[in-house]
Amino acid sequence: MNEPIVFIIDDDPSALRGLARLVRAAGFKVETFTSAGDFLAFGKLNGPGCIVLDVRMPEMSGPELQEELDKAEYSMPIVFLSAHADVETTVETMKKGAVDFLTKPVDRDDLLEAIRVSLAKDAENRAQKAELSSIKELINSLTPREYEVMTYVITGMLNKQIAIELGISEETVKIHRGRIMQKLGITSVAELVRLCEKAGIPPARPHDQ
Image (cartoon, rainbow, N blue to C red; front, top):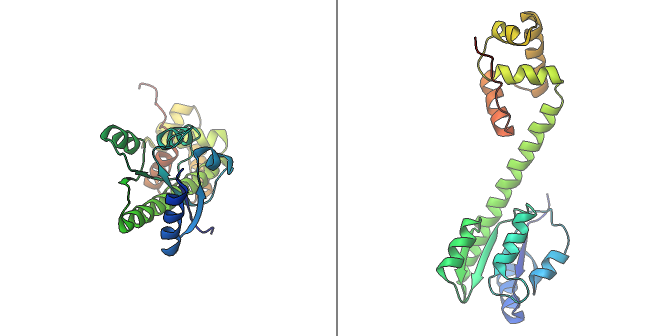
């Protein structure tokens, strides 16, 4: 697995060097940037990590970069730093998912703790995305009819009821149901329900009896 990177963005070269030294001394891999534009130009960043981001910068501010990353569905956790923190900025950035908002001069222990929390959050996000991708891949292996039967199974309906709904034999429903469980690697309806919930698959809406 790739080693996590702490991306530090600050337009003050002296502050940037100091932050980088502090974070590297704690054993983290670091990349530094003097502007939001330089960070964006660095390319698509798919590996694990987090961002330590100054609020006030020329051209593009920290909150503006956060907004750009959000639009691009780029979910790397952000720790904001500011010498001029105001309540409105703090609230807005936290509402948009920032892990922490620290004031300069930043306390070493507070910063390192915020980075650890951010990296843990990033690892959790990546694990959830990987799980969801795996679930969707399994579901895509179902035939259209198996998928349809699955949406009825998760309503809690019996095979006989599903057969009536779909106009097929109960035995056919049973066969489809078995194949669904086999393909998805599960053994119970409860597991199937949880899996469909994670994938955002809604249950079928049976016709009125």
